[in-house]
Amino acid sequence: MNGQPGGVPCLLMRGGTSKGAYFLAGDLPADPAARDELLLRIMGSPDARQIDGLGGAHPLTSKVAVVSPSTDPRADVDYLFLQVAVDRAEVTDRQNCGNLLAGVGPFAVERGLVPADDELTSVRVRMVNSGDLATATFPTPGGRVDYTGDAEISGVPGTAAPVVIEFPPGTGPLLPTGNARDDLHGTPVTCVDNGMPTVLIAASDLAVTGYETPRDLEEDRSLAARLREIRLLAGRRMGLGDVTDTTVPKLTLLAPPRDGGAVTTRTFIPVRCHTSIGVLGAASVAAGLRIDGGVGAGIARVTPGDDRVRIEHPTGFLDIVSGVGTGADGLPSARRTAVVRTARKIFDGTVFPRSAETAPPPAPSPGGHR
Ligand code: NQM
Image 1 (cartoon, rainbow, N blue to C red):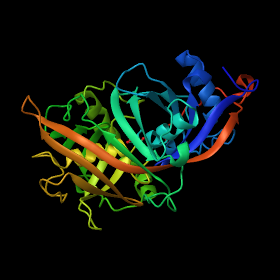
Image 2: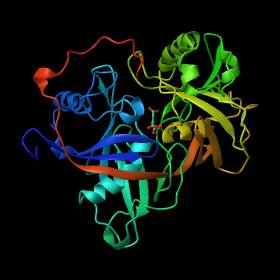
Image 3: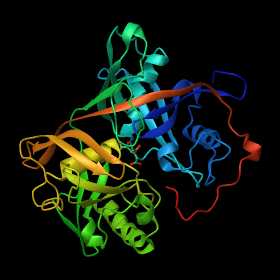
């Protein structure tokens, strides 16, 4: 491990609508258990406020990216995403994060893993969590990352340089249960995975409008119980096993669009309600809306033949290109996915973890902050 004694080199970045700590893999312990234990102390978990660490007391600001040169000839760098639970002593690699992905290319250039071109640099990323690939392109005038620009994304104040992210089609099935529609405890759902396992549900089937604020939805205890029940069953049907303690699948409630988009969404990740929507979550929703016989039909307004989809969410909208075709097996399959995000370097320095002796024991938790 490099850096000052007891400290770890770290770059804090906003990636899309999330925020996380970015590390070179070589600066963290190679052993996953030791790495995760260190990350809990760095982020300040378990503690609902994460008061003694870098975490921001919400799953969207309790994230870690671990980056290293890739041995895969199709990629420049490997990106391992780790979700650090807020009030549980838990670090999971079970999900990917397309928002933190927006910072991976700039981080790779900042750390000298990828040389910058004079105007724009493209970094090919292997997302270790899923094995899928992505290419991120961003401005590097004069060979340095420029974070300033005029790209605006809902959920982030102001403007910044665009990071254009392209995803080739993933390798897994788009419909993990093999069905366009499943019935889970009497609720019709569409289970879809275009980079993020997601369960689509009509908000009206859960006795909500789908236009409520995240806070109002989070306070609805009977909704939480129903979602939990649906998610546990969906996890098994999607081949994810027992998902009691995992962050996937996500659940997205669908309602008709209100602001000219294709659909209105409220996404549970899976307990807290997202203040916007994840990138790969949006890719899965966008693809799911195009499934014949899926629950999105009759709710969403998508234009046949146009792969662009505007997904409305609690703080605005996310525009994504995400098409669905037919695979060689005759089943629906994803085409290319593309999205524009922004990222910003917040600080670059050395983070000092709370000492192991003073760290609290793992706290029992109702799972309220996942
Ligand atoms: O779906 C939150 C986020 C995410 C994930 C979550 C994400 C994605 O907004 O690609 O970015 O779903 O837990 O950071």
